[in-house]
Image 1 (cartoon, protein in one colour):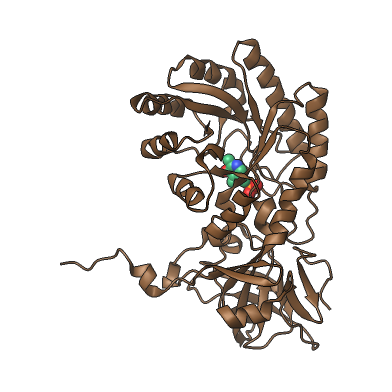
Image 2 (cartoon, rainbow, N blue to C red):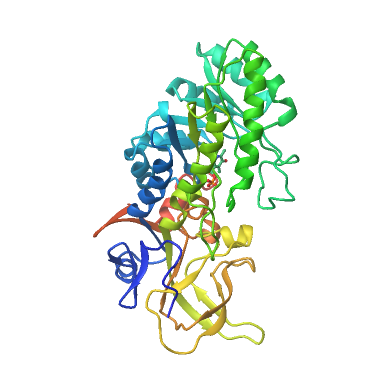
Length: 425
Ligand SMILES: *Cc1c(COP(=O)(O)O)cnc(C)c1O
């Protein structure tokens, strides 16, 4: 029998040997909507959010959902209605927030390569803050703001250079990567920002990486940030808000990241100790709000025994679910209705013409053609990274809310894919 504590439990669970999401049988959803199909649990998303909210009770704190993790309108709507703001990385994402019922005043704009047109649109919409990632960006944002008669609220993203030896999973908070302003240059950057008439300093931020499974890197980065805030304020530049980014990991395969409330209880204690507990606080979680709330359903097309490997060929592929091909990421793959025979070890692969098109390697499964499988922990960085490679339409998406299933995105047709293309005249 399959492990009772699947990633996504208790929202993802077997009931009478049939895999369910909340109260709905996933087999029934696959039959009704076809495969590959992404299915998300609203309760799982709200439960993940509630863990942060518990820790922040009685604080001035705002959760900005990092929407690149999953930017489907129905998902954004859930978080907008739950009172979240949004962390965006493009003008397109701002348009999605507004289309989903979110408000520009609750938006912060991150990213190393913001274009002038994107800056202008965000300024005119009245977003809360630009998280600036370089000194050059300060100058350009100042020019754009002055040209449209606005003052841009800014935070500077600090690269805290958290020690890689103790924290090997950190990938964006190290010297040598493209994100943020070097720790040693931060004070100068703030002094420069404060001198520019088109900018108003409102905060400071960091985002040190993703799928972080221990609290130490956050503790280290927090202390470094607070040291900087003390220096910057001593230079006469007030910092209104502190933004700690996202990055908290989820369970893909027995990973045990701290719970969001436990992590934040620890971080808040440190903030209190250092006298910053009553500041305006912000966070930008993505993966930890949606990753375990989603599954991808796929049908076994063929079983192909081989001399070295057996292949289980399914109808989901790297274009639908790019994380294994891109990052060698692991997702659990489980049957919707487990069989009782002997498992065989398979590479679970998609139909795309690339050897990198695999979903899982060396998986023990008892399956036959026509069986349905669920790829777990597929709520984050799957659909939002999906492509049309091999002219494959992107999957449909369903949001489950208790006993109800809402289609939040129709399956993409080949006409959808060819829209905007033209033959030579
Ligand atoms: C991607 C990103 C996040 C969210 O990261 P998760 O690991 O999904 O929580 C937050 N902030 C910034 C600036 C990001 O680029």
